[in-house]
Length: 480
Image 1 (cartoon, rainbow, N blue to C red):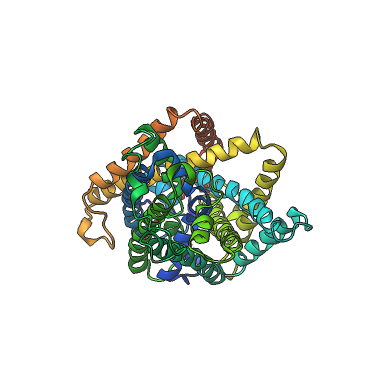
Image 2: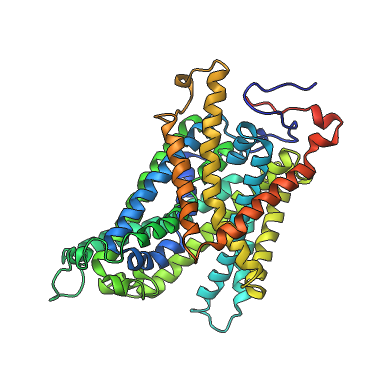
């Protein structure tokens, strides 16, 4: 017999539920999962370019503002994930509190984001291994890393979580060492003897904003993408022990660490390297480590970047498979995607996501200027679109919760200063899209992303099981 939910639209009865998953992740797993999704090649390789484009103080300001924006989004996600800790996360939240079409679109956007990333990360890993083993074909390394990432995801969430914990720990340790050693070098406590301490002269040598204000705004778009991955906490909430306690703890711990890591890294790079030089080096981490006298800095960072790529691929495959599972669970994909193994793994969704990653890898090799360019553009567009959906979902949830007689004070986690927090998050994300429209190099994201969203809504309308009649049309999903 069908039932009607009091806090959301009617959607089909799920084939499976988050109870099919194993609640085996702990707070430390959530923190490292989120850090692993954020700290990657963008920080290790591209941070110098950010300093070069926006200027030292401009880059620091952009990362500080980006940290505030992501904190607003994560407070909204925290409230939703504690009240409704489902593996489908923001897709399930959007389905219930905005509408099934939006939930369907959000799931595909986020799935594509990580699927495209998988292809690029496997390729980059192979290229980095070629520095040590030039005689081994790159595709062999890419295939080996793809197999390793698949196996870590294919057995139990605990194996995945532990693998991600240790991979992320390597990256975090590298960033901490970089900040400590670089900070010591800034004050002349490390590095070659006889050379004056650089101090913070380079930060203001050309003035506060040597390249103007507009490059800072453009850099903020890249900064928003740099912070993407923190939302993985919401996806893992359905597989976490005591989500009411661990999810808020993980969000707070992740966000302040990210801000410290990113801003600390930028300060060290900007102080140690002149702005015009920072954008030319292959990796500012290698350059700064070499300046402080650490031997084999290039090999060390090669290893760290490979682990960063594997970590990002590991968490990306996890996220992509859970998005497909949520579509199968909501009956907008065939039932095969909603099946979960005894170990708590949506294996069919995992296999399909891995196949998508391999196809993205092939498109990057054979169609880099056409298909792959479109996929990358949609991927970059998707992150901010998903954040906007999180903010809107939280506003809709709170309104429905109060209208149904609920007291916000009773929520396990409550985003403060409602409605200003979700409104601030939504407007900040919207401004990112406005900024993209004025940047010729990033405008293609709008040209590809907006039509993709339209296609997703059309596809949902054509496949919506409620339009087919029968038992499915009257079934309704309950939220506990």
